[in-house]
Length: 400
Image 1 (cartoon, rainbow, N blue to C red):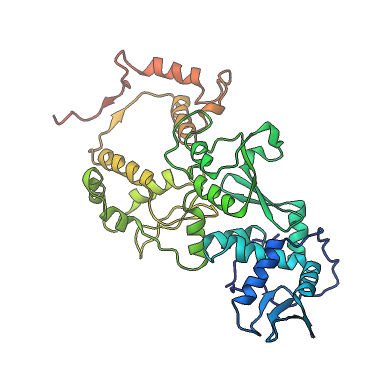
Image 2 (tube, rainbow, N blue to C red):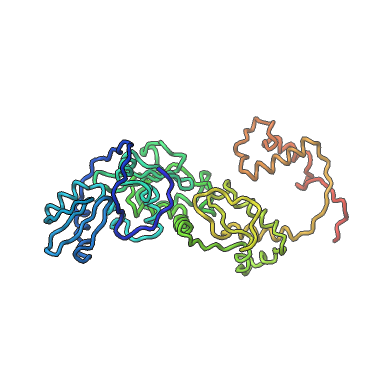
């Protein structure tokens, strides 16, 4: 399935005849017409004036002045009673249940509807193609989530949500949930039990599944795991994403965070580049940074490739910037160390490993790695004094 940009939808669902070509028609699974779907069609017709159609993919239905109904399919226009209408719609159950799924079950236009339609490419594929794909299972990625959408024999959408690392794991081997609010506990801590202050960090724990969600519960589950991501994704696609850049965000800070406002060097904004490089990389956050230094000045570092946008510096960025503001206010001093070339490379390796979160991947026996624990402890034993201070000496006397 393609990754479409939603077109403007109408209140009446899909319209128009199926396109014909030489390709083999998709195999649509058998679909029954639920009574709720048929009743919804009658209610929609009752809400319209006679002759005003309810539109489905490939045909329309209108209420006639005499109380009957007219089904128009291409060049045909067949008057019929309610029982005949039911039989005709049952023969077209995929199109009717598709209309019902989005018009009545999902409901109002907005991020939820757009997201659910994007899952199955409802604005780019025919009902037949989508139902055939749904029968096999349509898979989508959203951050670290693996989403699988399917359809029942009544045209009802069902969704399986799990960590991408658990793709292919049987449901019985995972902890199953059916309440979207359960997701609040799942996102609180990472695999090691550490608190996750940033919900879009790529540190979501695995081992769980929501195996059988309806459309509304599915949307609520995704939004609980990744708050506001669908809403901002939708705003961006509609051209309505309101971005608040660094300077404007910092000017709003007060109290203990007000110190960040002093960290402004006019045209020199390299410090903000450092912040964005440290916090807003794909390895640290799944959002795609859209904020810049200000309206006229872009940052020099990449904003990432995430599916959902970041519209302003988050609280984690602001908190980190506050600490760095204080640290960067210190006057630099020059220190002299005696390091062998290998020790210099080892210091570089240690910084790289910590910054990239790779220390747990370095085996204790692999002393070729600069950030190896035993090798690092040897360097500490050699260079640190009894008080735990690095044994370098300043080349200039302390001013104090």
